[in-house]
Structure formats: C-alpha cells, structure tokens
Amino acid sequence: MMALNRFGMGPRPGSILAIASDPRGALLEDLDRNTVSPAASAALPGAAKAFRIVNEANARRQAKTMAAKKAREQAKKQQDASAAMAPAGSADADGDAKAAAEAVPDPGRQFYLDEAKVRTETALTAEIGFAERLVWFWSNHFCISADKIQSMSGAYEREAIRPGVLGRFTDLLLAVESHPAMLFYLDNTVSMGAGSIAGLNRSLGLNENLAREILELHTLGVRSGYGQEDVIAFANILTGWTLLAPGADPERGGEFIFNPRLHEPGAQTVLGKSYADEGVEQGRAVLRDLAAHPATATHVAGKLARYFIADQPPQELVDELARVFRDTAGDLKETAKALVASPAAWTLPPTKLRRPSEWGVAMVRATGITEVDSLRFTQGQRLLGEPLWRPSSPKGYADDEPSWIDGLGRRIDIANVFAERISGQVDPQFVTETVLQSCVSAEMKQAVAQAESRQQALVLLFMSADFQRR
Image (tube, rainbow, N blue to C red):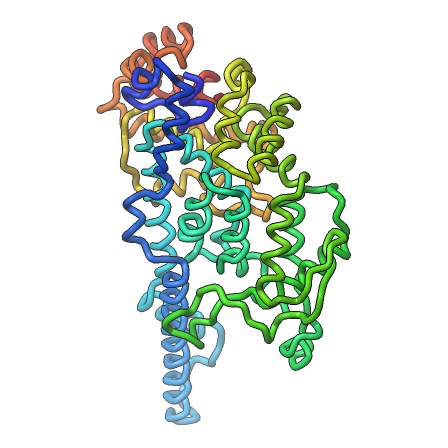
C-alpha cells in the first residue's frame, strides 16, 4: 500500500488490512494520534543530565589517570638510582589511561544505545509511522552528530525535534537552535563577540558556524539572497547562546543559558532589517523572521516533497506545499496534510530508493519483530553507511538515489545475516502473501515460493526492487 510505504515505515502484519478502506484517512489519523513521544523514553535521562553524568565520568577517569601517574613517579623517585627500571614514557601513560577507562566506563555509549533502542522500537511498533517518518525527516534536517556530542544525541531528538514536528516551524526552529546539543555541535559555545566583555578580556572572537548553517541549511537555503555580512551579523547576535558548564553548576550544568558577558553589544542588521540589542530576544527575533521568510517555505517544501515523493518532485507539488506553509504561518501538521492530499503523492510510481535506516526498519517490520538489539542494529546501520545520528556534516544524510545506490551490495550481507537468524520463525510466504500483499509483484511471490530455503527466499524478498523502493 502506498500509504504504508511512501508515508509510513512499511507494512507489518495486519497493517494493510487495517487501513485498506481509507488509506488517506488513516494517514491523517496517524497525525492526529500525536504519538511522536514514546512512553519508553520517560526512563531516559534528559540531555543536560546525560551531559553532566558523562562529564563527571570523564573527570573521574582523568583523576584516576593522574593519580596513577603520580604514584608511578613517586615510586620511581624512591627506587635506588642504580636499579633497573622502565623509563617514563607513553606506554606507562597509555596503561594508566586504559586502566582508568576500565575502572570508569563511558556512560555516554550506553545512553546512545538506550536512545537508539527506544527510537527503533518506536518505528517498529508504529501502526503506520507517518508521524515517526516526520520525526526522522526533521531530525536529519536539523541534524547534530553523536561523534561530537554522543551523550545528548538521542535526548536532543526527543526534546527539540519530537515535540515540534506537528506544530509550527517557528517553535521547532527556536527549540532546535537554543538546544545545548546544537550549540555545542556547531561551536556556538566558544563564540564571543569581539566587543563583548569576554571577547575584550580573552582576545577571542566570533564563530560563524551556527549562524551560517541556520541560514543555509535550516531556513532560507542556498542562493536565497543572504550574504557574508548577514552571516557575520547573525553570528554576533547569537553570541552568548551557550550552555552552563557542569563544573560551574553541578545541578544545572549542560542546560541552555544566555551569557551576556559573551554577547556582542549593539544593534545588528540581517537581510536589511535592523535588530536592536535585546539580549537573547535579539536572536529569537531573527529566528522568527527567518521562519516566516518566503524562501524558507520554498526550501522546506522542496525537502519534504523530495523526502516523501521523489528525488525530482513535481514543481506544482513543491509550490502547493510552500503555499500551505506560508498561508498557515508554518503549520507543519497542515503542511503534512497537504502532502497527503496531493494527487501526485498517490499517482507517481514508487521510485524513491529507501535509505538504509528506512530499509532496515521496513525489513524488520515485515517479519513482525518489535524488539531489537540496539548494538546489533546500530552496527548494521553503520555498515550500510548511515550510522544513527552521525552524519558527516551539518547537511545531514543525502536524500537521493545516487548517494545510496552503491551500498546495495552491503545490504545483501545484512539481509543474509538477518534472514539466517529469523528463518526458523518467519515463513517468507506468509510475509509476501499476508503482510506485504499487493506491495510485492506476482513474479517476486513466485521467486520466493520457488527458493531453495527460507533464508534464500527472505533475502530475495528483502533485496527485491519491490522492497527497496517506496
């Protein structure tokens, strides 16, 4: 069914029958159900708390390393000068660090895996998964990287992305750009105005990363009329947007704070409009105006149409989504509804190549499995070139076929391993005839039926063009 493949996470047992009478209505109900905040996430720590815990573990690990180093140096001093002893060197230091790491493991790794498990199982158990696909879209649009801030990566998505994907773009933008994970990822925590108190005292200066990516990636898009002078002015406006250092405040460390000592004083002009210095409100005012800019509507509409419909979506579809976005003041739920209402969404053939994350979840959903080993699953995503919350740049993961087509060979390996593990419990003919039904061609059903083993049949199915595209 188009509804489950194009807009959702793929069919699972019973899902096609459940929505067959009114697939469009089922998608709209999925949006109204407001299931973007999974109950299982309540047990996970918030971003700031996770950041504090990891910071404390790092401090303890460093302390143990230093204590071991001092003990070793003291022992050497007490030895007779003529006694044979190993010279101080990197081997001793490496040994100290290794012993400290074993004594105080990194809790950030476990936070990441726990978050990955909740996220993946939310996708596996979703009735349709349209709202969940929107979470994935916006999380990639406003991406951060766990390679830089692992402890906060999952909590960032829960706190900044999930609550806003069916609200107004303005609110989502404000939540994202003020989240500590984004500020840390794009180096705004080390940015200070040249004329600020901190800038004058430390002779340090501006970091333009956050301002540039907001303009280029998060709102207006490239070639939309802004220049380098706008980036610099906006970067000055965002100085002071930072997070509390855990060492300075053990109770609230890791939380967002506006620090006026870092903020460049005075009015700034962005896109021809002057913004008075009103502290943190100066930056919020710019973000609100960027959210309402016509170029933002066009940029967002194009990305949504490309993500859900086709690598080269019809221009009339992009124009319609942009119109709804503008007319509703950036109402993301209404924009998503317009996507569902579009004739193109139901008449265009399924040409989109599933990204590795989408393919992996669709494959597991088709078997009816609802629980995963988060370590195994994240390792599989890494092998397929789309490690969870680890894009190589602030652009996020690419959303076109050329970026992923060369990785199909690696999908065979993953499909083989998965099929071998489940072939004893999963009947491939049940999957094709009952779960996927019309999603699979008659030719593929015949190939599955004639396969030499269940494992081979499942691999044929999961690697088929019917299953790879949506």
